[in-house]
Length: 258
Image 1 (cartoon, helix red, strand yellow):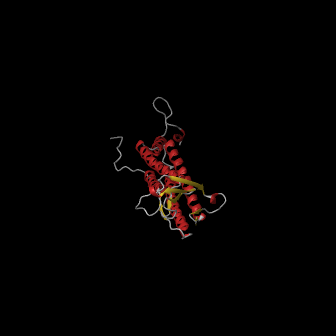
Image 2: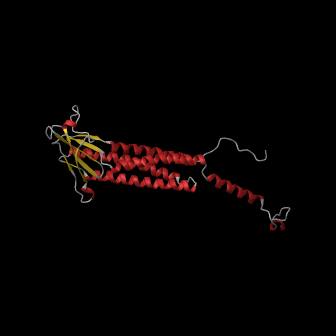
Image 3: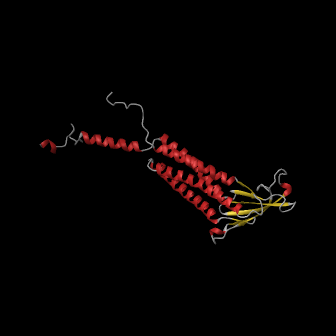
């Protein structure tokens, strides 16, 4: 009975620790070391995050520009010298007056927007006063345009949240925030792609509002940037899911006694 009240001592008279407590401390230290990321995993996370940064950059570039769609009139509508076309995005629309001589002779419609000419740009009023915009006697559908813009802003918010999670992962050296980051990036990519679909529906609604003037329409490079960004973000999110999975070694552990 008295043996339970004595703490074992070593040969120098120092108080020793029971074998079970020492093993528990070693196990706890080993568990904490295993929770820390290795250098190779840290490098993989940085590469995946760099890929997502490319997606975020393309999204910001596409959202801030007004080249989502181009609407072009036939060349002979405005006369033999000039023709008009328009291009717009989520926030702003521009009507350009081009010289017919600069347009490709084999092209039936006015354009493209890169040709030199006069440009008149205005911001959409349905964000402030709720008024629809009129482009070539055609009226926009403000509900669809607002939905596309809100989805794009929500996507940017999820990108910022995912980036914060990755920065915390790299600074703390733990993989706890990888799963929330993967969820944020995958969701942001999906929201970006849905935003493109909503914008395309708004373009079709604009074209069907009036049939007096035929227009040729095509999605422009801003839409391509946003679509590529959505694909990149979804792929980067799945990479973070893979990196968050525990790594198990197939090699047997060496015995210290041998």
